[in-house]
View 1 (tube, rainbow, N blue to C red):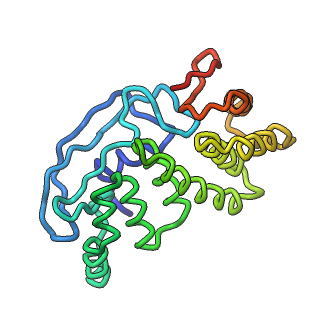
View 2: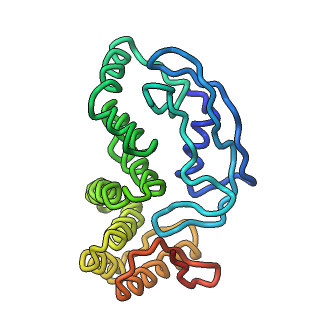
View 3: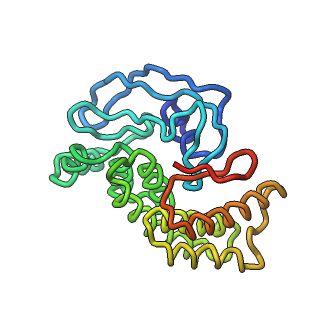
Length: 244
């Protein structure tokens, strides 16, 4: 069983609906697997989340997404310092980080986007990659349309994989959110109308409050779509839309 490290925990925290009592950061030493050399990194140790936006980004005393250690020089993202690579994997990874594509991602893209590319290269699951590309949209800035389009395609495929399961409703809501944020209002309206008209929605949730919240989000999304808003939005404690 792998020992969770400080920055592995920070990554999980930034992608998770749970949060720790306060935001703290730690200075740690990380071994870069590409060259075997240690380097200093500052990672989030804990954070307090007061809720989340419709795209699942957390807000509060929390870094969302959490900072990721990157090897000096190569830019390789170390998301798990306990992971052991075979010699063959290291040979492939060293060639990968020297490739024109990877150097372009280092120069022009964000750490989470680069991590997603590493995960794809290493053959990790598309569900895991979808979550990391979504996190990349939270730090995207002017890259948002490109990142969100990639995230949308990944989450649309996840909806197909999750069809018939309880997780599909949350995935469908995220698809609709990305469609709206990209200005694809007709597609977004069809997604949220489909959820509202689905007699099984929101599925078997942990409690009645969660189910009620999901219904309120659908109503809020349809309101934003009518206003042709692409804003980053959430509900406040009174159920009103807060948008930016």
